[in-house]
Length: 187
Image (cartoon, rainbow, N blue to C red; front, side):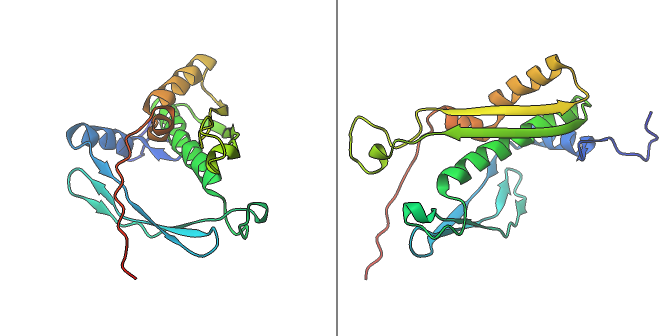
């Protein structure tokens, strides 16, 4: 039993803070993100992460740059992951948060967690060589390798929960509406 001064920490997650975050989300659910990407020559780009805006008005300043590039074989300079690798990394990272939180709130200590995602693009879609071929993935396959002091049933429950609640899983698994505006600068 914990003494009143000890915090309940599972998988390096403070359960009191996790509970508070969930309670706050029930009252002010909005959480806004922004990223601005600038071309950096050839196929390179730098994406600057903007502030996270909570529904209650709180703002968390973020100061990160995410670089993207293509390998030399795809006419890049191979200085950073390409957009497809970043997409899969974002998906895996988001699901990782769900697995860790799901285990923590159940008091399950994780020993290891790994998510491997694979997909194959048909470049005829990207290069507009065939109208019958979409530019995106027809499917993504992923494997979750997880170990901890939970039961197989608990891990299956967490797995289903992640599929139902992970924002990036949802963003990829269903079509989301994209609203675009083009602004052309005068030369």
